Every structure is written in structure tokens, then in C-alpha cells.
Image (cartoon, rainbow, N blue to C red):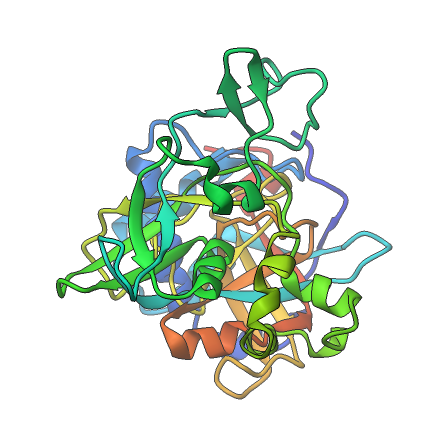
Length: 368
């Protein structure tokens, strides 16, 4: 596969703030990908921009063998060539934030806990080009199996009005419908159960419908100025307008199904699309159709100061994806777990320059 011309090689000396980047947190995140690759049945899917998954072989082998490193930055300099990622002419590089909510929950429906998180329905089927009906939008990766054939799955409004009855297990019950929605948006949650146990739920599947964010809906209706749309401002609007919650949320037809994750280390983030636990402040969600999981990205966003109060210039590792994350220079920064992380993630909407660290093995013509 030929490397995309969207990648323009540059020197490390030109990366703003690179000399101050210790890269220790990024190395830990990268090492998780390396350890996963050692036992995974197949390598990560190669993104269409041409960073072949097999090209990480040398770096993965060294990362598995060396713990800890005295100079993680030198590790990345040795194995990778930084390349400025050129976004499409119609857009600039842009980052948002996501986090893992931590919420009280119950295994059973009660007067307090009334809103369900569903597991995967028994009539939901995965679709690809070979079995997707010709009249169905190619976007759909999931459908519903019926006696008449495969059709679009129920959307959010239908599901919340009872369409899943008898078809999907309830993993847990939450006390607030808006909290349920934001767990859907984040794709995972840490739940403090009434019985005193803590569990983690993570993405299992979705209805297949495209995502429509409430922020864009509310801005379009003139309810919140577009430049002031944050998770916090959206929540505040819902608190002030509880009678309109369904009206707004049902505009988003997408619906997420979860599974309980067997993760022993509750101090790290959830297991995400790259099949490794996320690292707060070091994991980034990218467009998985374009990019390859495990790729390091140096993100330069001088106007973003929510992470520690200084301009955001940090090495991140591609370990997740999301339906709203589309484009070569578009990313979602993982802020961590709990309310404090939510305060950070909720305000991240900033322009950014993306530098992909491309394996030198790939540029040298070998991927061993």
C-alpha cells in the first residue's frame, strides 16, 4: 500500500514543544498495543491512508521487551518519522474530548433507577457488503433480522418506546435519562452498583443509524449559540427544559448496546476499539477507516488548555474510534474517568495540527 500524500515528512525539531515532551505516558499506551499485538489473532486493520499495521513490528517488539525506558522520547524518534497530516481543503484539524462517566447504578429496576443500559439484542445482525440489502444505506453496519429479511434496526425513539421488549438484556439501570444518553456518546461507563460492587460497561454494538449530536440540534434551533455548545451547556439546557429531552434526543436515531467488561484494573480506562485499556491524556480516537490503531500522533493545539492549564502539545496513541470522528486530522482526546475528567472532556472543541508518527520501517520499504 502506498503512503498517502496527506502525510508530509518533517523534522522532530519543527514539532512545537517536542523538546519538552517526555513521552512516558505515550510509551505506556503504545506498549499496551504492542502487548495486544503479540497475542491477537490478526493485526490491526490498516487504514486507507497507508500506515500498514505490519510496519509496527520492530517498535512493538522493542516495546514488549523494554520496561521501563529511561528515554521514551528517543524510542519514538528511533522508530518513527513525524509527518504533518494535511486535512481536506474544506476543513482544518480539530479535536474534541471524551471520558468514561462514573455513575451510580442498579442491577434491578427500582423507583430511583428507571433507565436501562441494554446489552446486544438477539435480532441484531452484523452487515457487510455481501449481505447488506441493496436498498439499505451502505452506512449501516448493523440490521434487524426478520422473517421477511434484513431491515434497518429500530431507532432511539422506537427503542425507548419498548421496541426491544424480549430481545435485549438490561445490563444495568441508571437514574437519569440524560446520563444514559451521554454513556451512549462516550461508549463506556464505570458503574457504582447499589450492592457495593463496581463494574465497567463498554460498547458492544449499535443500531446502525448515524449519530446526530444534541449540541448541533440545539444550536440549529437557536437554543444555544454554536460557539458555546459544550457537554456542560447541553446538560444545563436539559435541566432547564426537562419536557423537551425526548424531542431533542430522539433526533439522534443512533442507539448503543453494551457489554459488561471483565477488566481487573479499574484505575485505567475502558477497553476500547483497539482492544486495550485507554490511558488518560494519552489515548486518542481517530477515523479508523483512514488511520491504523497503534499509530502515535503528536497533537499541537495551543488554544486548548483544559489538560493542565498549558497549551496542549502532546504525543497520543490511536486506540479508539467514534462515529463522529471523521477525517484525516480529526481526533477525540481521552480525558480519563469520573466527573473531573468529564469537566475537561466537555469543553474540548479546538483547532489542532496533527503529526502522524509513521514507522520508519514503512518509509524504508520494509515492514518486518
